[in-house]
Length: 223
Image 1 (tube, one colour):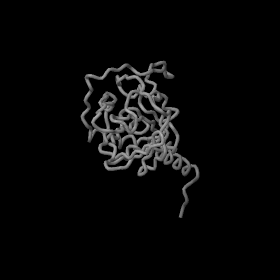
Image 2 (image 1 turned 45 degrees about the vertical axis):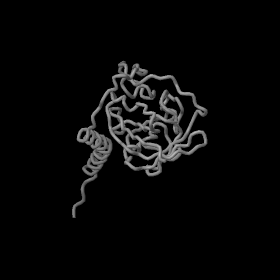
Image 3 (image 1 turned 120 degrees about the vertical axis):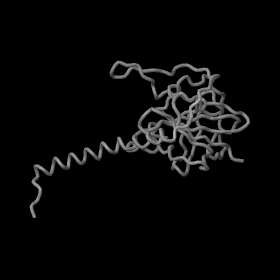
């Protein structure tokens, strides 16, 4: 049996490794993007929302682009409200089925490179209204549990009926997921406050590793 010459074997190894690495990046993006367009939900812009463009930075090409470490840049013209008064600066969120435990969330926060943030002006956990919580995600192969830059990577695996636990100011609250969806950055209705119920909304970017769309998990306080 004739063995393959080393001069031909090495290029084959490198080509195979390159294809595998490229596929590990492209395939997750492709699957998520395809799923979004096959099951795309309607996006309605709240005509009453008052907002302003989020912070912008200049990239290496000299082009102004949104600063996605700032929570206000994640949606087009998100509602602008005064920060709510809170007895604590941080609280925690746990999503056991997704193996997210005691994720720190900054109340009225803005810097997503530091931690997940509670969007200023939305309700506090445990109070009537909608507590909106935003966290970063990245390509699946870069996920590190507890890293603020990948903190919500598991979120697209959310299912209706899942349990979410919030510890706010020493009180534990139990929420049940009742809706998940992918929306455009124009869908500012995710910030809507309905004071006849107590909800939380968890948000991250999808497809993982991009800022094209937003994945939304809406949960309601369990009796």
